[in-house]
Length: 241
Image (tube, rainbow, N blue to C red; front, top):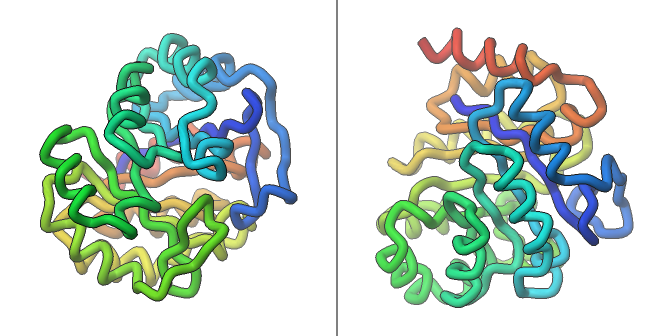
């Protein structure tokens, strides 16, 4: 199970939100490139980037910060947030990220999503954000009448690289991940599932590493020093052997 430190960008700064609420923001740094180097120095092999401004505005916003992160990190990065068209995808990939995470439009326009998966093979990750099992869109501002599992099964029929599954109720709350929900998701689809939301302790990492997951995104717990990145990577590696 890959450990992916999260770098959430808003106004060019590294921030974390509670449950996706833009009014509950904590700023952790004003130099995203330096933050990227911190995580790569700690052993990270992949970074998860989120353009929070883009998620809310429906278009890429923090391009300068993303380019600096990619240049500083020297490892693959994936980017989500506000990517709603083929032009947006091309723009983001042009910033140097390895792959992009698509969420909102994948739900609203599955035919389009299938077409871009085939247009950019191995470059598209499906971002499924859920609240009480239902899919949330538009930077988590709206909840659709569609189950996360049903959407995952549908999208997995196409050549996507992975699924990032976020339980909004757990995200940024430091209450642990939804292990049962993640196990259900991983069992339901053949696509690698990356866990996101609520990972707070090394015991959380240990529990997730026992599941057939492709990765685990960690945010606030790393920034607040509750989880040591090197230790998390060691636990994940040892249980994955």
